[in-house]
Image (cartoon, rainbow, N blue to C red; front, side, top):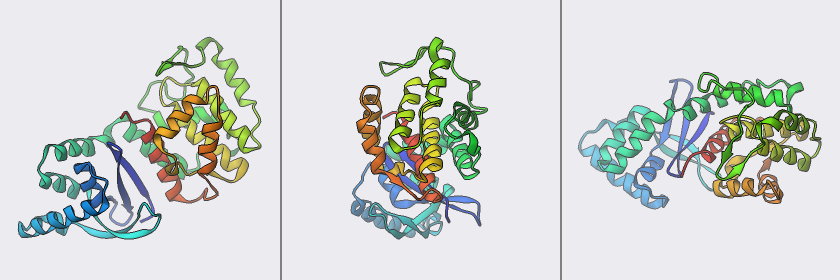
Length: 291
């Protein structure tokens, strides 16, 4: 039960754990209840589930019999036995709540994994687990292209290809296409022996924005690969708030102090911890979701 996933529905976490023996995900019932009801009070979610479980038992619903208990990490960092349910059970649970919010959640749950982000995120898990970036290439433009090509191959026809058009995002103009290749060569040559140097390189690559789409998801993996190689550390992205991260990255074009402080506070030496990198991918993709 070592593969952990965190999915986000309207900023509510839905934790899941992979069952190797039965080859499927188990999802936290309390997280589903909280997401459907848009309620982040743990006690209220627990009481609601207690009431609903008793009601479903009287109705002899299979939802209750489909639940089991597994240890999941709570917000205090400790693991507790938690009611979990299979994917089919999630659909039945949502239907049993019987409100419009439950149907909206179910639409998201059933189709999110078929989206570009959902399919790409599965590839990201494999990319990290398989250690597919050659050590000699870490920190190069080639490595970043390899990461992008792996994440988005078959999803975007420009996967792994440096853009040839000038792009903007949220009022920010990224490196003009005619200067991009020259700038990428300069960024690749930047030193990466200290934390400060590595983050400076990361910030400059973000400003360059070499791909038409998927830059953030690719460069965060690229950053972690450099940190692992050079410092024996990586970022625990689950410790970095989405809004704070996005604000810091916007400001980094003129002042990188905020993003450096955020990243420094989230550094860990657990570079081989599967839960760290699985959560890291989940949070990385969460940063890209529209509010």
